[in-house]
Image (spheres, rainbow, N blue to C red):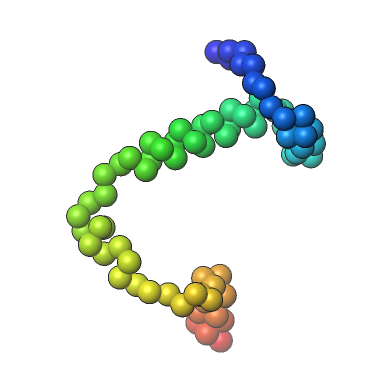
Length: 82
């Protein structure tokens, strides 16, 4: 059930948020609700324990700084279907 919430924000932020909401055909309430949902789900996911195997394997693969997974996959598909 929706509950009313009063927020105090900077006028420029409100104007920017209203413009963003209008451009994306949504409401400020929906934006705020989605943001709060994102924050709370993110924390919930982050608190899940990591298995010892995953912890051990983390960081084994070192990719170059300029690694582009989309380009690599495109190149792979090009080679595969050539």
